[in-house]
Length: 490
Image 1 (tube, rainbow, N blue to C red):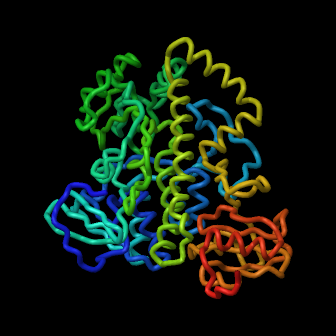
Image 2 (tube, rainbow, N blue to C red):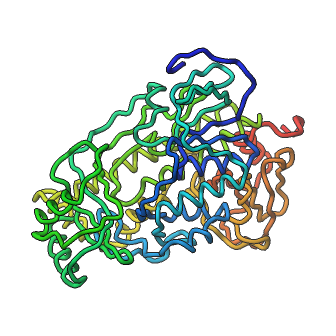
Image 3 (spheres, one colour):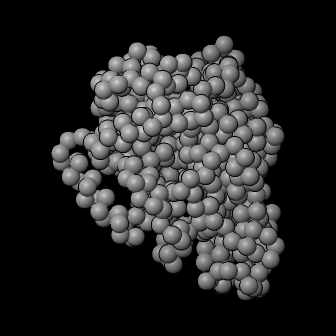
């Protein structure tokens, strides 16, 4: 498959992987690849990082992954913890007790901060980031991808990954379909100062929210975060004006609250689309390049970062030469269904935001149902992505799921996963990683707080095997980590 044809200079590889886009997904993927010594170049079309301060939320599963790589403490310094409840369609319910995570909260953090920290982490690990460089075309063959930049420069790498957002150039050049639904509604979002007392704002917001859940003004330092429905569906490439905010605030709330001095303003829609394929040959897609959905529930950034954690070690295994033949195919097999589920739950949430009588009746019914712990817990775990179970075949419920962080004699479980390697956690003290010890660490702890004799964890923390039989373990080591150093082991 080729895209945007041009003359290819068949030179040796300049890089192992080129990543288009240095947002949270691209930066995370670059860091994951560097843990395995992969030569990575990240191309970012913008010359400067985003400057406006939009608050994003890191959910439990993303917090676990950040803890796994030693990044969580740095993020906590810049974020604000809040309860994990009240996230599904904005229905105000407390978080269930005893959630299965050592990080059972939501972390609100400014988007520029998390982007900077993730990029800094990747660079510290040795990734190269070049700003003001956009992908204009590429052509792939059996060995590599030749990428042409907007200034005509050509670069050759083993793989190209498009992490370049909803309007992904890589996806479009690749010819991958992006079916779904266009925006039916749009919402204005910004940060600005107000001219009325906080008490007056709180009373008006509470009154409007009885029927309109797509409206709020929330204090953010000396300014307010403002969200209000737009008048219609317009051209999203054009930023809204302050007059647009004033007009819509008056239409919805009867007052414009004296808004002034905006720090940033934007609009978002409820378009919902899923790429038909996450991979064509040596070109892959991740993050918003592969899926878009409404921001309700705050899942978008989390979904992209989790894509990167799933893809990184698999792509590195292929480049390092030890990947099983079908390992890279599991990226789409595992992550595309997860994205499809997120698209469905955001569709449902957007319906519950409607002011029409039918959706409002369903919202009232669901509000009552969420008083049941099982219902509330199910929805919180879905939003937080700790309910994900990849299909690894028949086995105990833990198989295919991620493990929560636990304390071991050798330290925390997530701390032991920091290097991005697999891990055998062995309560029997008689299992071994044998010829896979260059890829999989072995921790023997007979008193580990675990209900099974042994588990094999992939580098992303998902349980790939459960048991106590060495031969069965060897089969699964081969399945996920390829041939052992000693061919006689099998």
